Image 1: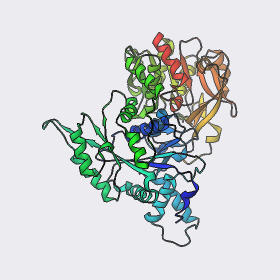
Image 2 (image 1 turned 180 degrees about the vertical axis):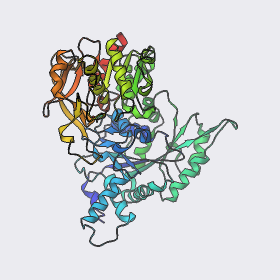
Image 3 (image 1 turned 90 degrees about the horizontal axis):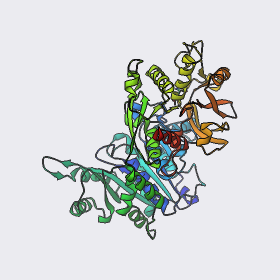
Length: 542
Ligand code: GLN
């Protein structure tokens, strides 16, 4: 064990976020909020997520299992919490910000096979915990010069599978002293019949943490009702935590209110005091407050339909947030409606899409629900309803156009029918020899040249070159490009290195654009994505 290795790093401070009682308390939002608050004080921050499952990354997980797969600019398929981190703070996360148990074990096992352990027995402690610590300390990124590393641990205290992470945190706290702070998020339920808020689950959860040798410094209590001081006092004294370090996270009308609520209760100041950093003045966070004021003042509503197959909020998380953010900057409340593409037929499409100011045709994989997406794309094209197709959504717009305008009734994607005679969407050349499924798609940011005069280029403020994130194996088949363009669907975004079509649009429609890339991954609170902005702006006018 190389115990003095952290000496080479700048003296970063480490904040560990754990969760207790139940899952889905919003640890990701609290982690992102802490990141935001420290960043507002001028600190250089990163936020990383450690997930206890065995998959190497969530890329192979069905969205029903784990929600959206978020993609970093450097092409890592990650947990959706990284989307919160980026949207709140604007930082670019990388492959080093999303770690799973599977990745930890793979590194250790690969090393063992390589003979690096020189005959030693490889054990959870110290070999697995050492690898966890190494990654928690971000030793693969030695030149980051960070002031704070925030590490969120997935799962709930007491889970068997997160025990090695807890042991790593226990050791790091001991080794780093005041430079490590533990924030534990728990739940305080309200029992209606007794008309009482109950702190016992929190006490048990903290005991569990203490049993692993970790004394939390700060407790964040999720609650649906306001907790008065006596309640906080009770938690403080039962859990050995200072009163000022017991903060509450009440239900908020929007997740973007959370940083402000945490700041009001002094969460960032409490962290700094624990570490021993002078607290100084509370930052004004003017642009964040301007954004919140816009959100509170937006009265008019617009309705946007998400045509997709995953009937689960988290499956299209970044798209949802991007639409909400773009709405706020256009002074409207965006109401999102999931429209299950498996249920869309020619007979009911008009009813299913009725009342929608705009339609998103969602990304996805596989055959299920695609015919409904194609019918929806035809309806919105022929009725000139603003439509934004993303990845698979763009591919479905292309197929619809091929079938109904170019006259190729059997047009399809090679993904759905490898033998289709009109493969207007085909597998990328580089993908044809790939047999491994995990992490092998075209992933991450690639350049895209925008054609002058196009709607897409205008949306980007007339920029000639952009860079956007991808996650796909199939692409627009260039053999059909001239035909599409002659009949009115233009290829207006091209990857210069591989000549791949990245954006299609029909210029004589109000807004009919499909992107092979995922703009939703790079839309943030302070910088909403230009395509979502332009789409919503058009929907508002229509
Ligand atoms: N299944 C399609 C492809 O692999 C689209 C992927 C997506 O929507 N992310 O190209």
